[in-house]
Image (cartoon, rainbow, N blue to C red; front, side, top):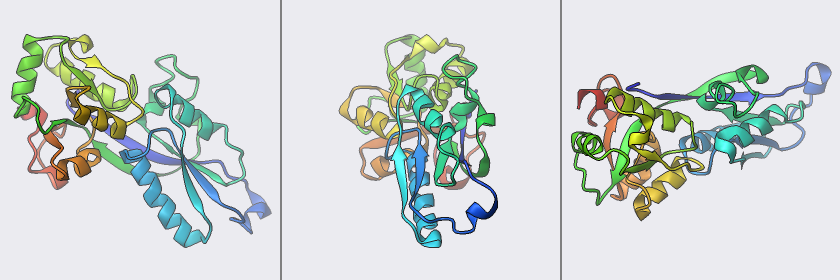
Length: 238
């Protein structure tokens, strides 16, 4: 897999009939299964800001992390069906049950809209020895198991991003050690501190650290250069 997309959908448990006439009468919460600062959290906070202006009530974002996304997705599914809990369900909800992590599937939610499609990428710290994606992939081939990477939880979308990258190189998942994290924000902090060698998060999640010259994007997982990241190398063309 040379490209990984992460789709975010709002899931809501609503009541029907006359009970909705006075809605909303109290604050609304949006549950995010991943840590603060990542793409999912950022999208949720933008939605919360817009809803707050439109509905004239407080809309609070609650980060329910843990279990590689299971904890937060479970909290969304089990929320009281009164119209006051929304959640950001990410692509992991389509994979968790296949991995035996939970019985939840996308069928446990009422989708409202797709909020974002996030392109995968590869990032290194500003002081990394790797100047481009070819240097890094050559190193991985010559030194399987030596590098460490992160981006989110075990078996998450960004972990799948790494596995797909390695598969396209003819290498097993064990060729790079995956270090689970609560989301891209914490993974990028670990990258800057030297705890890992690269991340497979989206360029958007890394933008603030790239702008601060703490992190560098090596490549995107796009099929071709386009859009916001047209100036970044494409992994499959490397």
